[in-house]
Amino acid sequence: MFYLILSVIFLVFGVIAVAAFAVLIFSLFASNAYGAPYVPVERKNLRKILDLGNIKEDDVFCDLGSGDGRVIFEAIQVFNAKYGIGYEASIWPYYASVISLKLKGLGGKVRIFKKDFLRESGKEFERVSFVYTYTYPPLMKKISAYVLPNLKKGARILTVSFSLPEENGDFKIVKIGQVGWHKIFIYEKIV
Image (tube, rainbow, N blue to C red; front, side):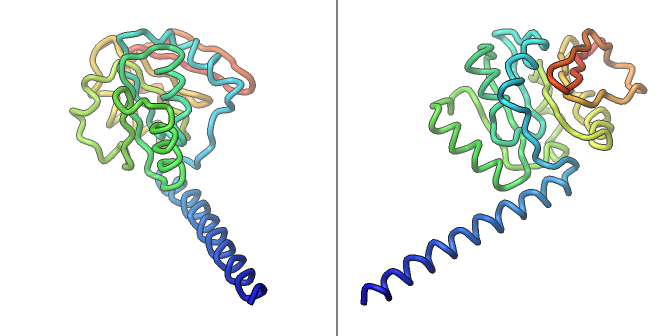
């Protein structure tokens, strides 16, 4: 009887482990399908990266591809941004961020959506004053064409490792920095 119970316990844990692994693998493929794999910025570099952006207390901070939420949480908790909005289409990072959001008690200051931000109505970005993104160049073109035109004049954009397409004349580059192996680009909307 003992061995039967032990076998059932191992079977249950095995099924849970396989299911968790399947969700993780599916999330990786889903992230790629939306334009960028889930590759979080290293925690040791995060504060330095955000410090370059000069986040202000009245900023509405938006992370396009928010992953596990670490960037939004840092912007709210350390840099005192007024409000945080995140978009994450992949299952595993989205649920990881929601759990962290609840554990940190930031539900009134942060909202994370499980959706592709390119499917969002442009009006959702009108109140955003600071955009953070760490995505590949093909997705940067889509961000430049779809999201950025909806931002108000003076909004800032921080991109990690990849710059915005040069043909977008609505923005000027205000700072370029280096944190670890990441090149950081800071832009401001001028139109």
